[in-house]
Every structure is written in C-alpha cells, then in structure tokens.
Amino acid sequence: MTARLVIMGPQGAGKGTQAARLAERLGVPAISTGDIFRANIKGGTELGVLAQSYTARGDLVPDSVTNDMVRDRLAQGDVEGGFILDGYPRNAAQVTELDAILADRGVALDAVVELTADRDVLLERLARRAELEGREDDTPESIARRLDIYAEQTAPLTTAYAERGLLVRVDGIGAIDEVTERLVAALDDASVPGAV
Ligand code: AMP
Picture (cartoon, rainbow, N blue to C red):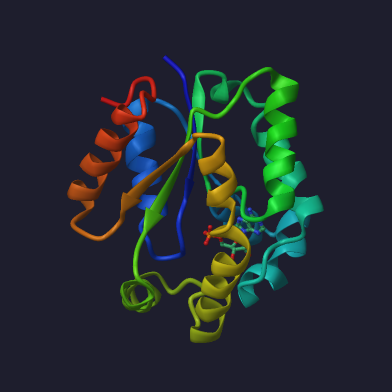
C-alpha cells in the first residue's frame, strides 16, 4: 500500500513529531526539508552554507535551491512506496514544482494534512522548544518571522488543496498520542491507504 502525503502546519503545531509517527505507522519515509537543511548546515556542505543565513533569520531558502533538493530526494528508491513531506511545499511556486515532480514520476498526492493550532499555543510551545533544543532559529525574532511567513505564504495553499479535494484538517492541540489517533482517523475517513 502506498501513501503520498504532505503535512502542513505552523511551526510549533507538532508537525515534525506527527510526521515521524505517521511515517512509522504507514511504513514510509518522513521527509523534512527543515531537517535536511539542518543536517547540511551541521555538515558544512555547500547546500548548508547556502541555506544557513536564510534559516537563521527564519526566511525561506530560495525556491531554486529547495526545489532541486526535494526533486533529488523524491528520486531516491525509498520513496517508491510512498512518503510524507514535512515542510514542503511552503509557497505557491513550490506547489507548482511538487505537481511537476510527481507528474514526471507518474504519481499523485493522496492527501494534504493541515495541523491547526492557535498562535498563543504555538508561541508557548516554541518558547519551550527553544529552551530544550537550542535551535539557532528559535529566537523570538525568527519565530515571529516564521509564523508570519506561514500565515502569508503557506496557509493560503490549503485552499488550493481543498479545491482539489485533498485537504484533511486536524486539530493539533492535545497530547501527542491523542493527536496521532486523530490524524490516523481523519486519514482513514479520507480513504488514505494504510492509515489504520
Ligand atoms: P522547519 O524545520 O520546517 O521549521 O524549517 C526550518 C527552516 O528551513 C525554515 O525556517 C526555512 O528557513 C527552511 N525551510 C524548510 N523548508 C523549506 C521550504 N519548503 N522552502 C524554503 N525554506 C525551507
């Protein structure tokens, strides 16, 4: 059974955590563009050097860089049985690029999950994560910038996916297990293969 999913949601909504849990459940890789950038920054690669100034500020890395990176990742063998994309697409141009990448491979998305949460809850969670993980981009300025970019550029993408009948909206507030169960049930309702 294959499942090709996108998971969207503002920073702090628990997207990364839920993507990893869902991926395990479905037996597909979770692909986080943020994680790929962070690994490259840590490793000092050319891609990392390029991305670092953008990620530190909370700005989007230019599409030309991000799109090529995702195209390469989705060409790898382990995604043939499906995938969960976490953190991509984040703007309209990336939606167009993802459509093209998938069309070139003769496949399509099964669903786009949006994890929702209030800004107050997000700010609280992000402040806690900043203390625990010490991520370079968890400064108050960068957090605010990322939430603004999400609201301006990423959240509107859900409308386009809803029009295609792909959008599954899930409340991201609650215990981690509870949210995972909600997610699995919502995907099952949407007839996504292998969710239950
Ligand atoms: P995340 O871990 O998803 O919050 O991503 C961390 C940072 O990586 C973001 O603030 C951006 O700087 C960069 N990034 C991740 N995904 C993308 C994307 N799809 N397009 C552009 N930049 C991205």
